[in-house]
Image 1 (tube, rainbow, N blue to C red):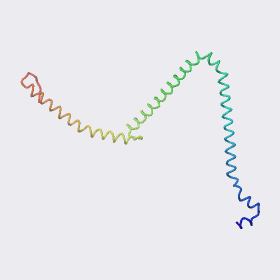
Image 2 (cartoon, rainbow, N blue to C red; image 1 turned 90 degrees about the vertical axis):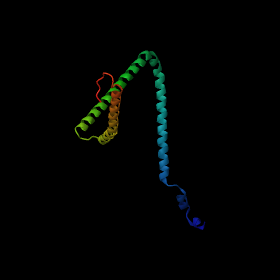
Image 3 (cartoon, rainbow, N blue to C red; image 1 turned 120 degrees about the horizontal axis):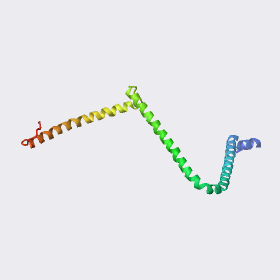
Length: 153
């Protein structure tokens, strides 16, 4: 306590005041927030005024505007979808062309791996199918041995 009493009054006051940086940050944020809030309110006000003024015109022309807006929306959506499908087809064809040419585009390794896995899985199935076909053919030949059918074993 005695240390505080020895300090001059201006030094005590200077030490108790917060630094100017947080104060400047606070004032800047407050000013910016107030300005943006004011502009937001102004925009909302003018939007409502424009809607009030445009409502009678929209009611008068709604029989023409609504169907035409729907048609325009559908046409634009159709063109965008068509263009997107076209771009997708061009990309797919380009990928296939590069793959066939041996340039190994992105994802070619995964495709080769999947093809090899399917080939290894179907080789066993193919062998079993051939065995079953031979079994059915042999069984059919035994059952109809006495008939006039020409079936080779």
